[in-house]
Length: 399
Image: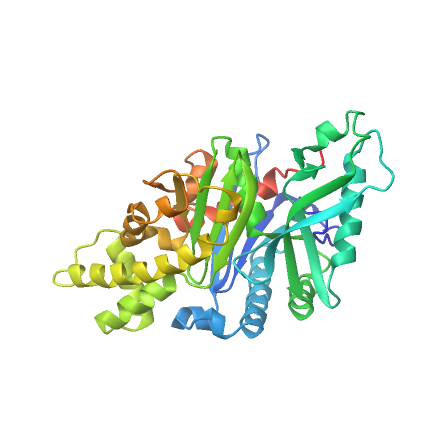
């Protein structure tokens, strides 16, 4: 759990406590799951809501709009909360996942020099060390939130349990590799203004990278893997080794670019092109047009792959890439993307392995195959599933 995630005042009413809501905010819009939790801890989805920005609906690139597009996204958040109030009469506790705004979320190592070594370090002490170091690095006018993912003492990986045992007097430096969410003040104020106007509901903002790390740690079967989230507007790469997040990279090129290329090839609008691509990925018959559409998507996948390889150059210094490649996001549905990743023409440049083992991850996999009555189905639902899992059972690095 991020130590600088904002928590607003208590929510009111017994009905509000019975409902939970998670909201994924991405450049293309917002989507939410509203659910209750049984005594056994199992969620039951009451409603799923998705709203997209006008630019996303029209297929206009997000990178051309910047903060303007994100202010529109904050407006969608307001509309979403209004819908919930109208239907349920209350607002539940909310966890908001901040999606692939790639320039605002970075990976940083925050170092702390220990001037007065202690025999042991409690979780609270570690948290205070990180808080002080992070605040000293914060940029004026920006809203920093820091989410540590590992602890390094004197250059060696460790954890809070080891540091609490009473034999840590030799520690001279602590380093906290962290996901840092550095939201511009106007964007942070926009999001928080929307939530605070609803009577002080409890809200926590969490970056997507932390949500995915939390989900894959709980899964327990994840070892070394390169995880690729190919969503509509961006691509996010996460490098895992020994169930630890080493780093991540991202770039502003997603499945909408592929749809846009295919739509142009088919002489269709973006909206019709997106519908056609979805039919194609679901295996519908397309007399006379399937081969041509597949060729257009193959061309688009090759362009996307060039961006991918450029981004991997920024991760190679961390050591050879693993052979396991786990793909998810809306773009994961496109078979030409999976074929491009499965080819033996790229991994050998970054790894001892020549052949990538590509696996498509579905949202329901994070709940042991349960789609929660269809709310979590395809690869595009993985972030939302991770968000729900985080809201139910949070983990802390300092416990």
